[in-house]
Amino acid sequence: MAIQPSADASVQAGESIEAPQLQIFVFGLFFIFGGITSLNDVIIPKLKELFTLSYTQAMLVQFCFFTAYLVIGIPGARLVKRIGYMRGAVAGLLTMMVGCLLFIPASQTATYGVFLLALFVLASGVVIVQVVANPLISLLGKPETAHSRLTFAQAFNSLGTTIFPVVGAILILGSLATVTADQLSGAELDAYRTAETQAIVNGYLGIAVALAVVAGAVWMARNALKGERHTASSGLAGLDLLKRPRFGFGAMCIFLYVGAEVAIGSLIVSYLMQGHVLGLEEQAAGKLIGFYWGGAMIGRFIGSAVLRKVSPGKVLAAVAIGAITLIIISTQTTGAVSGYSLLAIGLMNSIMFPTVFTLASEKLGGRAADGSGILNVAIFGGAVVPLLTGIIADASGSLAVALAIPALCYAVIAAFGVYARNPA
Image 1 (cartoon, rainbow, N blue to C red):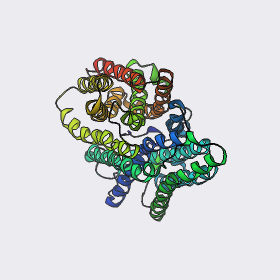
Image 2 (image 1 turned 90 degrees about the vertical axis):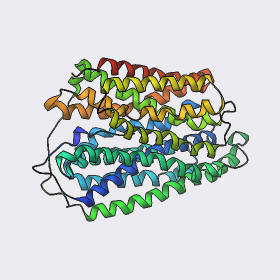
Image 3 (image 1 turned 30 degrees about the vertical axis):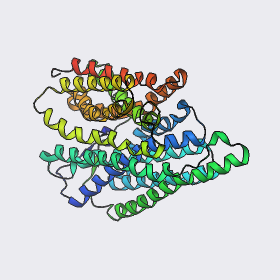
Image 4 (image 1 turned 120 degrees about the vertical axis):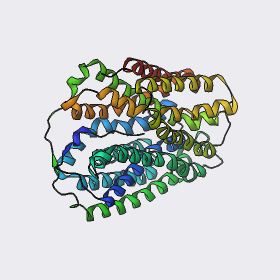
C-alpha cells in the first residue's frame, strides 16, 4: 500500500539535501514497512487455526494493526518534530523491534490477546517510520525530481508487499501439524499452540535482528541532515477541511480504499483454500498472496503512464468498476477463474490511493499540509472494513457474501472518480 507524505511531519528546508546514501536508506524503509504490513495476510490464517477463531476474531489482527494509524499518527509526528528525522527513524525502528520481540511472550503464553498487543506495538513503529520516510524522500534530492523519487520509493513498498508474504508463507504456514487445534484441549492444546506459534516467533525474530542492524546504522548517521526545521502545530489541524465536499468525499474514499484492499488481502488464503475455488493447502495459498500485491506494483508503472493522458478521475472510476467486476466474477464462478480473478483485484488497486489523495487535495493551497495529515489518519479504514467483512462472513457463513463489503467500498470510490473527473 502506497502512503502519501504525512503533513504532521512537514519540514521547511532552504535547499534540497543531496545524499544518495540516505535515499537508499529511505527506499529500504519503504521496503521494510510495506513487507511487514503484508505479513498480516499470512499470520491471520495461522492464528485463525491455532486459536479456532471466527473470521471476525481473526480480523482483529488488522483492526489492532491499523488502529495504530489513528492512535499513533499525530503523536508520532510530534515526536519526529521534536527529535528530528533520523532519530525519529531510530525510534520507529526500535519500536518495531520491540513489537517483534513481543511475539516471544505471546507464543510462550499461547494467548491471542498478547499477539494482538505485539501487532499494535509493531504497527506503532511502522507509523513512526512512515512519518519519517514519506516527507524525507522529497527532500533528498532536487525538487524537480521529487515525484520520480516518491514513485520509485513506492515501488520498493510494493516490492516488500510482494516478497514478504511469499517468504512468510514458507516459514510460517509450512509448519502446521497433522492435527488441528479444534481436536485438542487443555494442556495438549496449550502445548500445540506454543509449538506451532514458534514458526511465527522465528520469522519475527529474524525481522527484529534486521531492524536492530538498520537502527544502528541510522543512529550512526543521526546528524546527516543539516538545517532541519519543522513547522509547529497544535490539536487536530485540518479537521475543518472535512467540510469541503471534495476533500471530505476523498477522505472517506481513502478510508474505504485501504479497508477494501486490506480486507481482500486478509481473506485470500482462506478463499483460495475453499474446495470450489482452488482447494489449495494453506502454504500454497499463502504463496499466491504475492500475485495480489505484485499486481499493485505492476499497475503503478502502467498507471503512471496512463494518468499522463487520461483524466485521473475517469481512470479512478474505471479501475474501481474493474475491481467490482472482478469480485462479481470471482464470487459467481469456480476453480481457477474464481481464484485468479480475486488476485487480479490487486492490479485494479494500484493507482487508487495516490489518485484519490491528489484529487482530494486539489486547490488546498497552504492547507495542503493539514489535508495530508487527515488523509493519513483515514488509513484507519484498514482496521474497520476488514473487521466488518469478517462479521459478515461469520453471519452469512460465506466468504463470497462477505466480499460484498469491499465491492461497496469500490462503488463509492467509483462515484468519487466521476465526481472529481474535472479539476477542482
